[in-house]
Image (cartoon, rainbow, N blue to C red; front, top):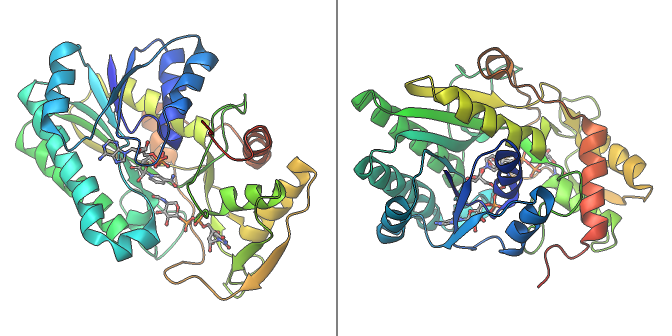
Length: 336
Ligand code: NAD
Ligand code: WQD
C-alpha cells in the first residue's frame, strides 16, 4: 500500500487515479486545508476502487504512527504542502512549518517504522531565474521566495538523509507548470478564492466566473512579449509518479528528475489554445509584470525519459480540452 500525503489535492487526486489503475492500494493522509474529501469520492467513481482516507496533519507524529502501525506501507508519495508563492511571502513561518517541518516529521516517523521509499513533490521554482534553457537537473539552484525556499530546504534535507543512511530510496520530482484534468472532467484543479495561476484563471473567465484575465507583462524577450512556461498535463505528471515509484524499488540514494514537456508556451498562446478548445472568448487586458516573474522557463526532461521511461504524452490541446471539460462540468469546483 502507498501512503499519499496531500492526496485529496489537485495533483494528489490525479496521482491516486494513476496508482489505483496501476494496481496499487492507496491510503491518503490529508488535513483538507486546501481540498475537499469529495475529490477522493470521485477518484473511486473513476477507478471503481476505494482509497483509505485518514484525515490528519503530516506534522502530527501520532497520526503517522497510527497509519504505519495499522497498514503495511511500502512507500510514500509526499504532496502535502502549501503552494501559493505570494502567500508564502506574507506568512513565511507558516510555509516553513508546514512544508519543511512536515517533511522532516514524515521522514522521522518513516525511519521509526523502517519505511524508506519516498517520492517528494519539488518544483521548477528551485531553479530561480535560469541562465539558459532548457533547464537540466544539474543547473544551479536558488530560491526567490519562501515557498521556493521550503522546497529547496526539503530537497537538501532529504539529500542529507539519503547520504547518512544508504537504505533510503528517494525521488525528488521537480514539476514545471501542472495544468489539465482527468479526461472524465470529474476531478480537476479547484483553487480557493481568486486563482494565482494562469490556467485556472483562464478557465474561470471562459466559464463566466471572472470578467477578464490580467496578462502580467507583454514586454518580456519572448515570442510575443508575454511569459513562457512549460505546461504539463496533470495526468502525465501523475503517471510520472507511478513510474518513479516502480523505478525506486531497484535503487538506493536520492535522485532528481524534471517533469515537464520540454515545450514552452506564452500566456497569449495559452489564451488562444483555450479559446479554441472551449469555443468561448477569453477577454484579457495587459498589465505590468508581476513581481518575481521571469520571462521564460522550460524543462529538459530527458533524464526522466532515459531512466524512468517516462515522457509527457499529452499536448496543449489535451490540456485545454480537459481543463475546460472539468470547468464546465464543475463551474464552482467541488461543491458540497
Ligand atoms: P494542493 O493544494 O491541491 O494539494 C496539496 C494537498 O495537501 C491539499 O489536499 C492539502 O489539503 C494537503 N495538505 C497541505 N498541508 C498539509 C498538512 N500539513 N497535512 C496534511 N495535508 C496537507 O496542491 P497541488 O497543486 O496538488 O500540489 C501538490 C504538491 O506539489 C505540493 O507540495 C506543491 O508544492 C507541489 N507543486 C505544485 C505545483 C503546482 O503548480 N500545482 C508545482 C510544483 C510543485
Ligand atoms: C504562468 C504565466 C504569469 C496568472 C507558479 C509557481 C511555481 C509552480 C507553478 C508550485 C506567467 C502569467 C499568470 C495571471 C498571467 N508552483 N499569468 N496572469 O508563476 O510560472 O509558477 O506555479 O511549485 O512555483 O511560481 O505559474 O500559472 O502563476 O503563471 O499573465 O493571472 O502566466 O506572469 O508568465 P508560474 P503561473
